[in-house]
Structure formats: C-alpha cells, structure tokens
Image (cartoon, rainbow, N blue to C red; front, side):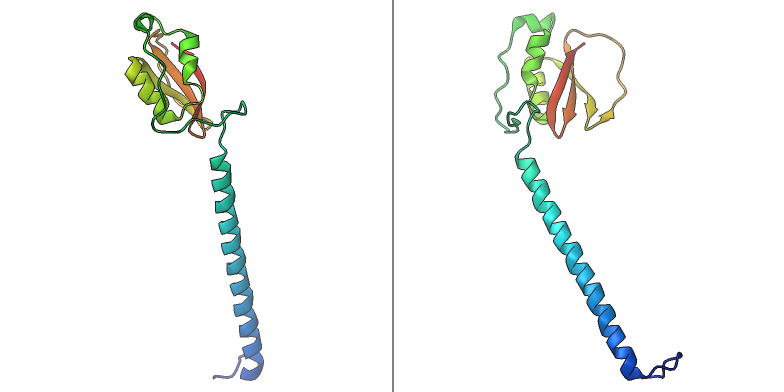
Length: 139
C-alpha cells in the first residue's frame, strides 16, 4: 500500500476505512428499513380508504350502478348524480356511461382541470380524491 500523503501509515488508515464502510452500511440499512416501513404504512392506509363519511370506499369492479331512469335523458337530478358518491373513479365513469350520462373529471387529488363553461343537464362533473368520488355536480 502506498504511503499516506499526510504521513499516516497504512495500518492507521485501515480502521478509518472500516469505520467509513460501517457508517455507510448502517445508513443503507436505515434507509431500507425506512422505505419498508413507508410501504407498509401506505398499504395500510390504502386498505382503509374511506369516502370521508366513515364508510369504506367502494372500489370493487362489480359495483352495482344506480338503476336507469328515463328522466335522465332530459335532466340528471342532483340526487341521482349523488348516487355515484363514494364510487371509485373507474366505477363512477362506467356507471355514468351505462346510464347515458356525459362524464368529466373536474378535480383529481387537488389538481383542477380546465372545463368548458357550457351547461348540460345530461352531464356530471366529479371531483376525485384518492380514487374516490367525493363531490359531484350536474351541468
């Protein structure tokens, strides 16, 4: 081993290298453990997703849509539109299509989208938080 430019012998440099390696290894272990804990906590939070009213979010693929109503072809009522509250985004869109409603997302997880100002009584605009419909309006 070449001499240390600072005058230290090779035998004195080796413990410093070992200490440095151990410190880096400990840091890597701590980062890995932190990441693993974060994954577990995120998974636990996702499993308990709710609509904000204390009821579990409905995210199953076979969510029953509200029954069709002939009046929806003229005007979707607010009470009819609100039947989609608590649905997952995909299920809400699927049900809107099945019911013949025009569907658009106005906000997703705090990000608002540009919308046209035209008013349509056959369209619902939904707001999504964590893949759940939390607000819905007609027009």
